[in-house]
Image (spheres, rainbow, N blue to C red):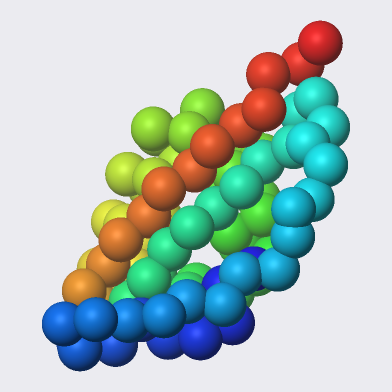
Length: 83
């Protein structure tokens, strides 16, 4: 969990909680506020569950753009393989 914005400064310091143990099937979504400000947590969860990571990212970025896309939109999804 990143708890400090990176901002536009040349040098930044990010606070990160963890480490958290990985479990088979875990899914991680890292995105910019351009995505999270346009799409709610329930919708994010549904997309990462319904689609493979690459398709989910494309879908979410397209949805955020349809909803106005007023900021940069970045999305990365990582799934821990099942054991």
